[in-house]
Length: 355
Picture (cartoon, rainbow, N blue to C red):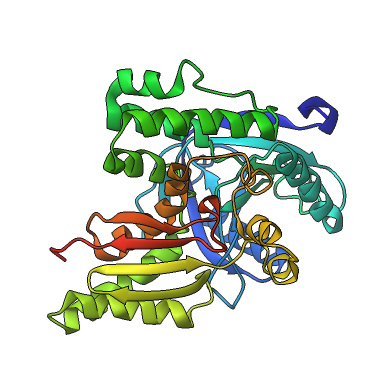
């Protein structure tokens, strides 16, 4: 089915300054309370549009979903009572929910089902906009925030290889329509990875593709930054601070790691399966690999020959973690991968020797 048949709109949400508050959402009424508090703190005439809600897809907080609610504002506000920033441009699929709040989840499921059918991937949060505010029963515009992998790759290729290198890798196919099939997305990515393998060295490939990874939740990165900085302040050995981060990951529920260890200046990490139940119940290795893989365009096509260079995207997850924690650049190597025929994906992060 097409976007129109689903009633879905594909659009850009322009970058805009917002007044916002982060909180841990336990109930829908929490959103109303936060927005009412924010609205009362914003100077008269300062609000520039309907409020929004971002809900983190995964969180380490046991006291509720990590969430952010706010209002677009006419200019950034400098105030101790209000946090403000500029939200970046977002590309979204939008579907309007006009029924009772109890059925909002059904609208979200419809939107996300369409995205899954097209093998689209999202950044690690969902988004809602409330054009009927302050009516709690007013319409809700549900957004699937698109992680535009192809565009990120094109931008990274130009940064790493220059415009001629970008053109050589993409061969003139810089984009796909939003309603492209999963097979078309797979073929586009496979062709780009083959050309990248032929034209770039390993460091260039890592830099370009790891920059396409999902955006790691900011609150989780802030946690390990704090753990590392605190441990670093207590010990002369930076590797003790790295070990403190690993120990923290073992106790904090937000880290989806099956296993991790450190050998010298290298941290080894293995992902949990994307579908743990299917992985445990799988009758064949092929079924285990499909249940393990997180990528929607790969997991059903593992036998079609995607270059392992593509897994530098997964390596970018760990690049974000350790560059945030240590404040230094890292290099991540793909040790094991389902694309190599392994049953797990393992990554080795080579830390900077000047921590």
